[in-house]
Length: 429
Ligand code: EPU
Image (cartoon, rainbow, N blue to C red):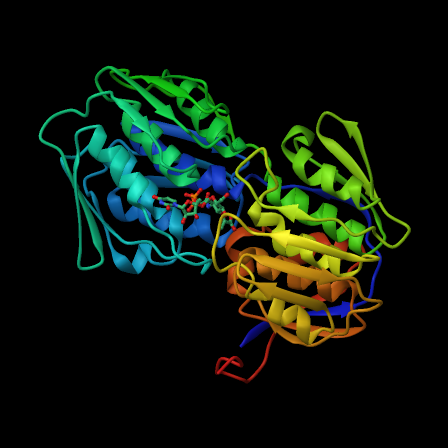
């Protein structure tokens, strides 16, 4: 089995450059299908989710050229297929964006139900509701979603029952080329929603209000790319390094980030006593030299505290003076990683959607699992501060979403190696 071995403890020092945002890129890649032509993207993160998306697009007929590992030219002139097979879509969640993107171009679309991080129930009822309101017929059977349309989609009012990033993205994708005006109420406001809208607008779409509760999309006939589009920096990768700097009592400057997007994280770190300074429009410095104060968090849609930073913050909370509370309000199964932190000596009690975290003196290395992408990031952070060699298994989760993660941590003074051992089974057995 492949593993990361983190030799702790260490203190992180130096500068790190953040990559492009995974959750923007996984929407923007399928969004290129709205164009019967060539799109040029930059700051695309080189992570396994993107490599999988490239395979899916190629299977549909896209021609994709890598100018560099982060710069792609995608030619969708000859996309001929609207069937994405299980082999390709099962690996990650964001393959459902193909529904909204392909239904513009084809009358019959078939997508196998997506996989992705195991965070609990992941219904797609709001995606289906949006597409049906726009005039598509959706059927879910035998593990596939079938979307069909008899004529062009027609603009409409969509009121989401809950705030969903994915459903908002899919509604934008499906309505950009529809006839007439679509309004999306109770829309998600995450930075990656705004990035998708900016990308589409850069090619002639007419989308206003992205980043607010109400998004208005006036359908246009076609999109015409006219320049290279650079994907925004990854909010969660930046947040992960911020927390790692704080937990290790380090001094790290995080470059190529958007401080505004980091505000919910910065606010909590400051509450814990971490020094966070905006040193420029695109970089922040994070310093810590005492034990953090206890704090509490409740995960919420943006601009609330991001669920994707919850496991990393739990490691910081474990090193606090006092007791803090985490309430997870987005995913119903996001505390599996706490079992791994318990193995390392953490003091965490979970009750449903709540975790009570008592600060402890030290964490100790142990063999642990990355239960999902962000849980994996939390295991690395825990390993950085723990005494001894922390072995992290199931690292494919981490590689889905963090570009060059070992190189980046090691350049800050960590000692992490990527190794293979002979064990084959699941140690959870
Ligand atoms: N939900 C429904 N019905 C739907 C859609 C969502 O009930 O049709 C529920 C979900 O079960 C969840 C809540 O609504 O309880 C929010 O889900 P959302 O749709 O916002 O999540 P998502 O689009 O599937 C994205 C990110 C996740 C991130 C969440 C929340 C991508 C590809 N994934 O997922 O990112 O946790 O938003 O911010 O953008 C990650 O990057 O590690 C990750 C898991």
